[in-house]
Image 1 (cartoon, helix red, strand yellow):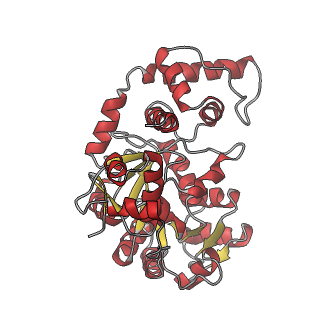
Image 2 (tube, helix red, strand yellow; image 1 turned 90 degrees about the vertical axis):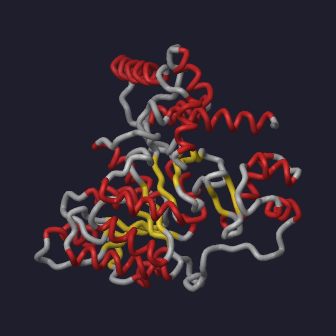
Image 3 (cartoon, helix red, strand yellow; image 1 turned 180 degrees about the vertical axis):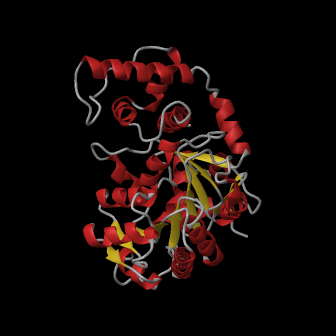
Length: 387
C-alpha cells in the first residue's frame, strides 16, 4: 500500500468513527477537518487532548462565551470517542451490508461539493447500503418530496411523476417517509431505481412500516445516511438530512406540502444551493397544497404537472432521450484488466487490484468508472459483474 493510499484509508476510518460522536453537518467539525484532517482530529479526541486551534466557527460570535461553548462540545465528543470501537463499528456495518463512503472515494457524489462552500453544512462521510452505485445513481436524478400525511391526490401525483421519471432513466431521490416519499420510492422502484436518504442508521427501519420497501430498494438502488449503525432518528436529524436530498440532485420537486411542512425545508436548501426548484399545484381548498402554492407565488418555483415538465428543468438540452451514462467497448488497457479481474461471484477491491496487477487507488478509480457504466456492481463480498 502506498503512503497516499494509507493516508486515505486512515482518513476514511476516522471519518467513519466521527459519525458516531458528532452530529451530521456540524459547522465547527467541518472547519476542523478542513484544517487538520480527520485522522488528527480523531486522534486528539480519543487521547482526550484539547481541541487543536481551529478556525472560528462560521456565523458564531467571537469571544469567551463561544470558546467555552466549543470546549464543552469538544469534551462531549471526546467522551463519546472513548467508547467507540472502530473495528467493531466497521465490522458490524459490513455484516449489515453497509459500507462507508468518504469524500474522494469513487462512489462519492460530486454534487455534494456544493456543501463545502463557506458556511455550508458539509458532509463528513456517508453510510451506504445497497447494490447500486451512489455516484452513478445521482448523475441523472431529481428529488421528489412532500407531506407525510398526504392526500390521495398527492400520492397519485407523486407516483405518476416518479414512474414517468424512472421510465426516462431519471433516478428519484427522497426521504423514505410515509406519504409522498413512500409513494415516490415505490413507483420509481417499479420502473427503475431510487435513492432513499434516511436520518437514522441504515440497520434501523424508520418508519418501521417501510422495512420491506427499504429491503427492495437495496437490491438495485441505495439507502444513504450520515448516521452509523444502531442510530435512532432524532428530531433535528430530519432537517439536517434534508440538505443531502437537495444537494444530491440537480432539482427538487415538492408535490404536496402544508405551510410548515418539512418539504419546504428541503426546498429552502435547494434554493440556497442554486438547484432547480419545482412545485405541483393542488386544490386551493387543500391545506396540504398551501406550501406548494407559496413556492409558486413567492419563491418563483417552476410549475410542473408531469414527468416531461420535470425533465425539462433538470436534464441538459439534447439529453432528454439519453439513458444512464455507459462506456463502450473501447476501454483503456488498465480499466479492461480491472474488468477482466472482477469475478461473477464477487471479490474485494484489494483482491481485484492484485489480480489486475494494479494499484489499489487505480483499481478503485477504475471500479467507479465501470460501476457508472453498469459493467460492475457492488455485492456483499465487494464487486462483481452484473448477473
